[in-house]
Length: 106
Image 1: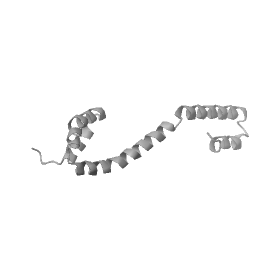
Image 2 (image 1 turned 30 degrees about the horizontal axis):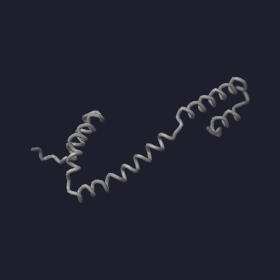
Image 3 (image 1 turned 180 degrees about the vertical axis):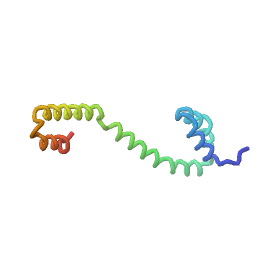
């Protein structure tokens, strides 16, 4: 039996394996052991994991709420407007063009 700590072995596996393979190993081999721990140890582990879960779910919700396609479309439209203005007013339009780039809300 190895004298390495479980955390060292898990870290090594996490670095060496693809995420889905690592998760499969953890779920098949470690989850059942965690669920068989005494109730007080399960409570301690859950009290550590629940705030992490909450934070990550909030981040995932925020990421999902970003309208990347809409932002991309608006940015493309603004770039086309800027390009048209530069072609039309290339000599004296730099002040307006700077404001189009810097101050124009997306």
